Amino acid sequence: VQGTRGFAIAGICALLLAVVLIMCYAKPDYMRCGWRHEECALSLAAFPRLELWLDWYLKSQRGPVPGSFRWRGRDPNALNELNPKTLTSGLDDYPRASHPTEDERHVDLLCWMVLGAQTLETISAALHLEAAPKYSRLAAELGSFERLNALHLEASTGRYLDWGLHTEKVALG
Image (cartoon, rainbow, N blue to C red; front, side, top):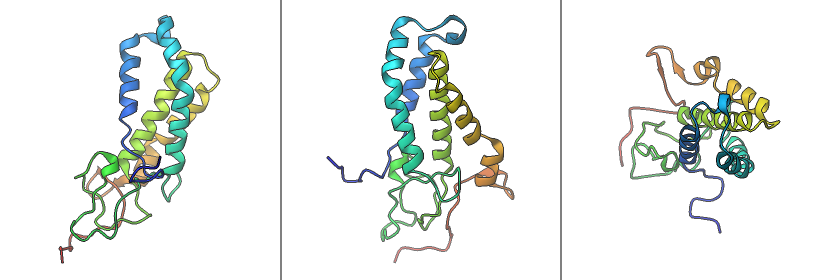
């Protein structure tokens, strides 16, 4: 059943944090010693679903510039907010662009996608799955500093920021 936000609007990627935590507690030196049978069984069962989940994010939250990502669900017609919220990101009060458009690029979502690719790379490598090189390449591509700098570095301040249509000259009517 479709929720009130709709299927195209992603929620926060906190599932990745749980998966990473499980991997860390399973055995920190998993690559050298190998995971126990229980961890392998859990990872094998979860892997296809995690692949589908990451693929859905990569496609549905794709931004306007190759390699960029944009949270969906910001209301460009919000009359009672100076800066429409991005509830889907979990960072409701993060300073996004004041005027939501389809041209936005969200740095936090890029970081989540890098973590997703790294997580699937780690699992597939530990389980000796054929997908390991695919996720290794994806993690390297999405996580390159050149890409991050090109998409999100504000050279004048040296900060990594979202990109979008913003003004300080806005007031509630």
